[in-house]
Every structure is written in structure tokens, then in C-alpha cells.
Length: 255
Length: 318
Image 1 (spheres, helix red, strand yellow):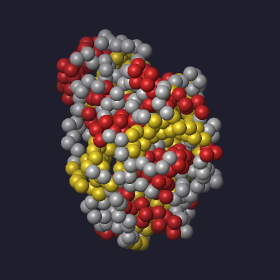
Image 2 (image 1 turned 90 degrees about the vertical axis):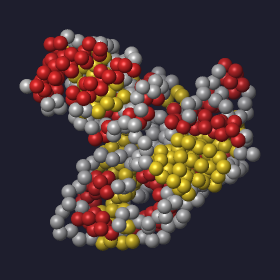
Image 3 (image 1 turned 120 degrees about the vertical axis):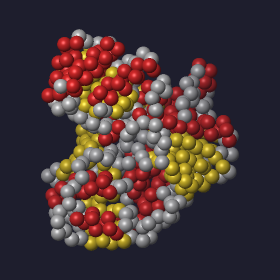
Image 4 (image 1 turned 60 degrees about the horizontal axis):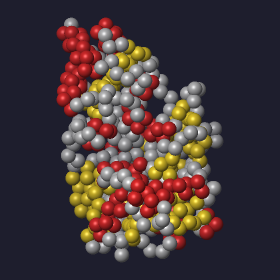
């Protein structure tokens, strides 16, 4: 039976972030949380493969205890089972730490055939957890995939890279990271949301895992990206537009 | 041993990394090492462009992905113990860097947009987060300090006459279980916007596909290219999928960007932040794009754009 693990991250919704009046600080106290955008594509692809080839999908996340909410959302999208790895120390992990925790937890749960991750998270977008996790687990990895199928015990994947499309074959078990173009994630209905609450969730804490946990990247600051723009406003009348065109000529961007 | 390593997918990008690499090597008083998969002639050129040493990576069979270099690079890095490894931030580079960093148990700053050394010779690295809304500053407490650097972050280095350096070939690699079956170029339906001088970008404020012709006309008068926001390409399908601008699409740096009916979602704004001048036309005076624009025109694009084309044509005739 095909055993698929899909990893997702519970992230703050960047569209809720406000910038303070000083133009530098971020106001995060009223932000909502969501499953990271590309991880929805990862979950959808896992479920799509399961529907096509049979098997079982487990959705995995690492986070602080309040990330538990994310499991219901993830399970309403189709996976049968959740794996929640939580600890108050699992807040603001850097990619190497996330990969280490995921690797330890996945190894503790026995065998699997395929791990699917999003290409990167919508908050930090480091694009590291997938390849680092593969490295930790000693798996072959295929990143930036926009098409996926199974042929026997082989995965056929299409990677979209800057200079073209690369079609690759890889034996299972393997890890892939997917691009948003790979599918359109389904929107769970009421029935799926209700069913999700009854699905099993395995809970693991830090003390149950053997972990080397020192960060190899430290954040020393996060500030709003300053946009140094003139912010001049004009009306729709011809003379106003004339002024804008003249300004663009003075700037040397229109000739 | 020590040194600054640079590795990128193509020659031009390598020259960009040599630029910042050279600055770091001078400040740290160490050697600059370029890694390349190119033939020897290019290696000699890289020395002229500032590398003290060029490491030629093993030539991979056609069916092998870059992943096959991870063990070669990790082994070499353990021996040479470089201070810094800078890798070109393309998809392949990003993948390779993450695997190499994992193998070396070190930190990696992905998509690094700025880096400098502090007084303790630590690299202070910046990158964009939250869809481009914020800048995260990171340091890497482990060795080597690693970063991936997107194309066009630095200008290519200039060659210097009379330079000498060492060329060394690395020959062994561990074949990857991933086999490349075929490669084909992307069937690009739209222009490459990354080099465009002028970009007219259309957004959700367009009412119907026919309004595109107005935008096209404006782009033509300005000698520019047409781009769009993500919903126009992905949800509405009015424009080719590869023509959208934003953090997950194309990143552009034109002299002039004109947004037509673009509201200014943060994912889009982060793709245009390197534009020299941003101009926006939108009938919603509260649209976020006006906060990120130099010149904003509040009005209906169906009357404003024809008038603008009119004025531009008159200017052009003079």
C-alpha cells in the first residue's frame, strides 16, 4: 500500500500584517493563521495520488501547541491521519531545525513511500525544508515539480526550472517539493470539515524524539521593507495626465 | 584553510557572485574560489575576473541532476573549510545549496538580497519575508556561512589584467538515484520581463479581456512589454501563465512600471520593488498600490489610458 506523508506549515497570514506608523515595525497581534499556500498544493497532490493509486495519506506539521488548530484544516482537505509534533520550543524554527524535527518524527513512525512538501512556505519562503529533510532521511529528492505520476515503484516528475522543463524518474521512497501550478487545491465543504474532527491525530512532543536542536541560522531582526516612493497623486483630467507624462520625461524613463 | 566560494548556474551569474565574493575576500584577507561546470577556457576567464582558484566540477552524464555534485562539494568543503559559500539562487542552485548545507550541518540564508561583514567578521544577511512585506536579517553561527543569491542582485565584476590563479579539476561524484529522462525548453508564451526597460502591468481592475488592447497600445507607445498580476494569469486566464509578476512569478526591475487596475497586493509589490519609477492608474483612491507608487493617477483607466497614449504620441512627434 502506498504510504504518502505530506508536510505542511501553519503560518501567519501575511495579508493581515500591518506596518506601524514608524514605517519599520510589524504589527502582528491581530493576524490570522493559515496552512501555508504551497503546502495546500502538497496536501492536494498527496490526496490526488492516493485517489488515483490507492494508499494512505498522513499530514504532518511541526509547531507550538497552539498550532493544533491546523490539523482539522489539513485533515478536511483529504488526508486520513494527522501527525502533530509540538513543543513550546517549536516556535519560529529555522529551516534546519524544522527538517531535523520532521526527520526524527517521520522515522519514529515506520516506513513510508513518498513525502510531499510545498516548494517553500508563504511566510519565510526559504525553500529548504524539503531538500534538507530528504538529506536527513537519506532520500532522493525532486524539487520544483509541476507534474507527478507513478509507474510501478517509480515516480515520474516534471520539474519546472528557469531554463526549461526536466522530466525525471526516481525510485520510491523519495521526497518531492511541488509548485503551485501542479494542481488547484479543493475547498473543503461542511461535510469534510465535520469528518476531519473525527480523524485520528498522533501527537508527539520534543521529549519523545531524539533531537539535535541547535539553530544554524539566527534571526537578528525583522523590519518592514521600506518603499522609498514619492507617492504623488493626480486626477483623471487631461492636464493632470500631462503633468505625469512630463514628470516621466524629466525622470528620463520616457523619451 | 579558508576562502570564499562562489557557484552559479551560468557564467554571467558567476560574475555577479564574484563581485560580492571579491569584496568579502578582500575584507577577510582570504582567497576567492569559483566553482564551475564549464570547460577550461571559461575557467581561465574566471581567473581574469577575480578568482584565485577555479574548481572544475566533475562533468555529469546527461541523465544526472546537480544533486550528484552534493557529495563532491561536501567532501571538498570539509577539506578546504571555506568561510563563506555563495550559490546562485536559481531553482537548481537553491536545491543544491539546501542539500549541501544539510550535509555540512550549517545554516543557509535563502534568497539573500544584501550581505555585509560586521566587526566580528560575521556575515549579516538580509532576505525578504512575508511575501516581500518585510526584511529578515540573519546570521549563520555555524561554518561555512552559506547564502543563495538571486540573479541580478549584484552587477557582474570587471576583468582585471594580468591575474594568475590555479585551476583544479574535481573528478569524483556519487550518482544520484534521480535519473533525468529528458529536458526541453519552456514554451514561453510571453516575453521575458526581467530585462524589460518599460513594463505596463494589468491587474484585476480590468473589466473584460478586450481592455487588454488598451494596455497593449500603451506598452507599444512606450516601447515596453506587457505583464500582469497573478489572478489575471491563473484565475482568469486572460494572460499567459508565465507573464505574471510577483514573488512567485517574474521579478522585474524596469526603469518604468505602469500598473493599470493593479490593486497592489504585497505578493505583487515585492516583484516590482526594484523598478526605478512606479506609476499607477486605478479608480480606487485607497488602493495599496498608491502607497508604493511615485506617480498615481486616480481615475478610470478606460479614459485615462487613451488620454495618456494621446499625450505620449504628441510628445513623440516633437
